[in-house]
Length: 125
Image (tube, rainbow, N blue to C red; front, side, top):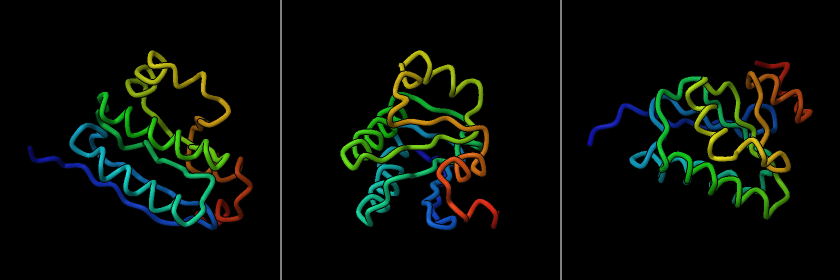
């Protein structure tokens, strides 16, 4: 199945950023997991996921997020989900993601996440 999803990574200041454009689903799950794992292998404890352009998320996408949460919790890190649309937030609420406040933080924008983390890169965006 052809997917029109892109998953890009970069470092903003000192904080890793994964941007998902399109579907976060069964077909893109491995690419997302690899992006998160590559940052974790470098010792990153806070990872921001820019969800502003996620158009669809199924159980595969949620499983990919759970994977990231589990890896980060082992390192006492946090996953920052920025700018989730209403449909995605509704799915996460039903799945119980909002009760994972020790490991998952929801923010309105990537800049808000960077400021909360205390990364000086937030001033560079």
